[in-house]
Image (cartoon, rainbow, N blue to C red; front, side):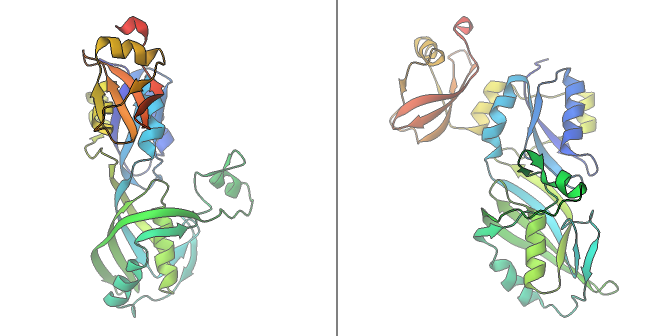
Length: 295
């Protein structure tokens, strides 16, 4: 079995992303494991894991857009903007109409400025924000620009006994978007508060098919480097002489019909050469896997 490549894990609720990485280290018997895009412990779904040399691709996969299904509870705000936090405010959301919800959600489509929750994995001076909060520090993370490509209301459910409204949404967004911050801000704009009670990442970039931890532990499926590059990026197949030039840092002219941006290079025998940048019709190396000995 190949010991390097991409593993697509359906993370269950409870474990942290780091916990899943630890399980993959044990499963594939290597320390060189990483993930592309943290999921909070309560969140489930797609966690892109890199094993071995594939960890060098994770930064490029992280930049891809993400898709989520989530439930926003209107009427309650919490310290963490999700169900794991302590209660901050509680007010009746019974008076909020469906049209008010639709109108408010519309304001959050497209480019928006978003302030991440203080309890997040963002690093401030080399230290995670959530660690600083646990240590008693009062912090404020500056707002950042994110893109909400699509924000669709799936259902609106009223819970009269709690005086809350649960809004189930589908979100397609840029990397770095916090869905719990979206829940907080929608609730704040409606003046009743809001927090996220459920979240599932259904897609990360081009990856939308995943396996549970239990399935992987029984049958450790791994996507090899060449397949990951072919699925994740536009790619071209090089001749043997071109491949030798590529791994030696010799500039190669890009095909005229190739769009600018990241492009994967594959050898004529199907091996992953690396990930390159097509800039001004010249291929510049970003990640190189192959060596001269490969050809």
